[in-house]
Amino acid sequence: MELKEISLVATDVIIRVGLKILGAIVLWVVGRMVIGFAVRLVRRALDRQRLDPTLARWTGSTLVVVLNIMLILAILSLFGVETTTFAALIAAAGVAIGVAWSGLLGNFAAGAFLITLRPFGVGDFVTAGGVTGTVVEVGLFVTTLTTPDNVRTVVGNNKIFADTIQNYSANPYRRVDLLAQLSHGVAPAQAIGLLKDRLGNIPNVMKSPAPDVEILQFTPLGPVLAVRPYCNNAHYWQVYFDTNRLIRDAFGSAGFPAPEQHVHVRTAAAVGDGASAGRAART
Image (cartoon, rainbow, N blue to C red; front, side, top):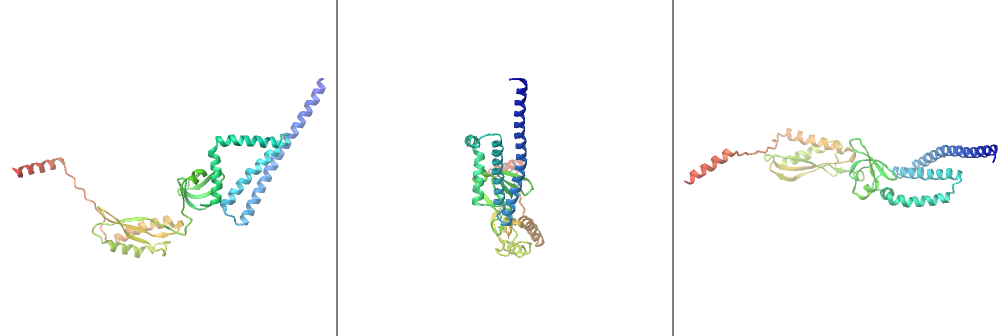
């Protein structure tokens, strides 16, 4: 083959490959734009239907993954790669990846169960997977929460689904548990009446059920009262701190003495003197 023919063949190959590469780039850019537009369209439609935010975000994430796989298959077919063969390769790779990354697939399966069973949703205040916070997103593999100290925390769905889940937002109210230590010189009935009269004045404390104030236990310092007002979860910490302040102010204004603990220390010299005095008394 002459040099001229080789040059013509090489030029033809370069042009064809270059056009395919250019077409792949254009298809990728346009495909990504179409995917973004389609996902935004679906999310708007779900928002108009007032679908649960958790399910809406999960649906959007799944749609993005599926459309990107379809785009990659279209680009490969542009280069002459058989999609059926590629699908078989994906299936084989999926088995291998499934064995190696069983935890990742477990997170995916757990995410599907969380969406189906819905033990919590976006915006709920929960304890899940050992983390307490507000749910920001339930994703395909992980759930994102914001803790009370404003730290964004990501927890694997499998860990959440396998552990105990506490949803503080599911019920209309929750109980605030506090303790009030009394001294032996204070009548428990007087202290109980004093607190019950004032707890209703704290903002956001519920009238029904009424706050509980009862003797919980006895200690060397004196009786211990269980002080338990009820409130909505959104007002929990405000009621918690206000109740603590009320206990101190109420007991102070009533003139209740502070609990005291007396400790008697016996030195070695005192023990020796006592033993000598005992022997002298016996003789």
